Image (cartoon, rainbow, N blue to C red):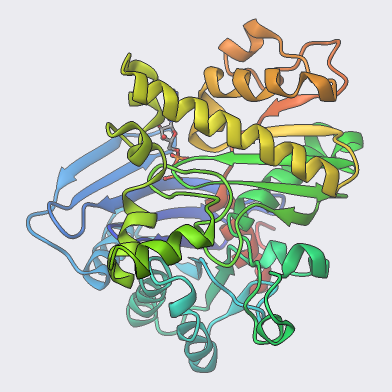
Length: 395
Ligand code: ADP
């Protein structure tokens, strides 16, 4: 039997998991699920490939550790023969040090804790996931896979802020995120269209979190997120690009505290802040409220602008890829962005776009436009298999 690996993605209010078989070519998904609503009314949701789906309440509040214990208990009950050979974890921040996945030991865990101030909303939960899994499976390799790693190695001009140079040396740089998604898409594009994949490609990861990555030869050259996951595109509840002078004004003249400012920028801004209605693109698209429409227009506008800027960075565009919830399923957002880039030679096939087809550009388009579902879990599983040395599994 092929080795089995579990992936864990521990966020603020949920722990997502997946069980894969370490097949030789690519990890094969067996079951995926999540415990959601940890702080309030948790639910355990499971989706078995070619099998049944379950969704059941779990009683009262759960800690991350108890959620992880419940997940492993469920896996062991449902798949008694599923000896787990390795566990892969999504970790949002690997700082300057980690440019590849790594097997976690005590020293690594200490280093990862040092990045908590760099990603306070995500890193502590990711690390709680690792600690919980170490407790449940102390003898199984735990592999940390980083959202920042794919972006390490950017040129100075794409990595630095124009602060005194000593800040750059201290590591106050543009790290970028969504790296596991971009790495997956780079691999998929190589399979779908190997010629364009080698050129200048921009991937638009448009979900609740949203960013763009400009690649050449399948490697990240630049990305819109920076030091934190706030920079770049507007998102569900995050502001995206903003004048730092405005933040100084809020702190100094309006007496906002750092906590209030953080809450404003991470939780109350973006699509939710602009619309006053929802962070959810589906809800905005369904609404006739002018502010909902203005929020969508802003999202499209900034996405178009940033694609144009990144096109300059990579010296021309050979392919554009949309992915994540909005990128994969919103014909309206894709149409707005692609039509706004007609001057770059992009042209949309309206029927293909309305159907969310894998290719939504017209045959006359100078640049192909793809809609490619992302799969961060499979990417984590792949890294876990390789890093734990299971890559000859599935014999
Ligand atoms: P996350 O960053 O949390 O993983 P997702 O990638 O799941 O987020 O994307 C969530 C976003 O995708 C939400 O704004 C949601 O409204 C949007 N979305 C999902 N399906 C559709 C759809 N059919 N049309 C428009 N937007 C959609």
